[in-house]
Image (cartoon, rainbow, N blue to C red; front, side, top):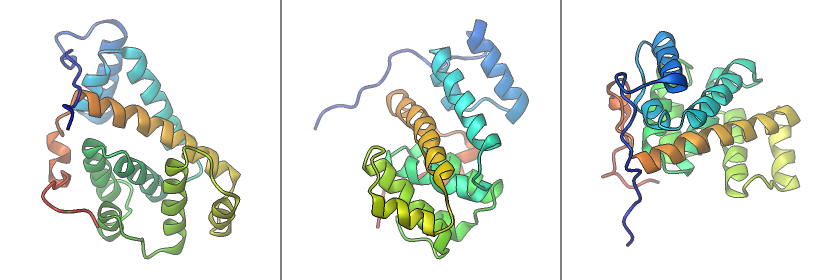
Length: 194
């Protein structure tokens, strides 16, 4: 087994932040009330954090998915990429902010089908898009559309995949510590996934 890579640069603290990094971290604090550890790790390269925040805001604010649907997509991708930080964060957001609900959130975390046909179609197609690296089969795309989605939703999944790839991969190389606010939703590594 090979050792996991870790960037050697420390996350950006408030004292160290300058220029664009300082602007982005201050903006996060003003919007969220705190600066997530993930942002501090990405702020080492402000272009990375800026790109992530821009794409994330567009996905959240300008998209066609409902907040619960957004979380289905984000959790599906974060779980597929094995990102414990984003799985914890989006689990909290799913339940407390987006109103996806505990049962659906836990089913996603457990790798089980959702008991809502439309959300399950979204979960399946999102995973298919991840698995095929954006080369969906016609049959899978038609099943997704038959559930009530359209081409614009396919493109939104691509945006979500891009945003989550940025955050998931940054968390992998930064070995980001889960923030206290997300801690109750930390992934339990002692439980085998279904």
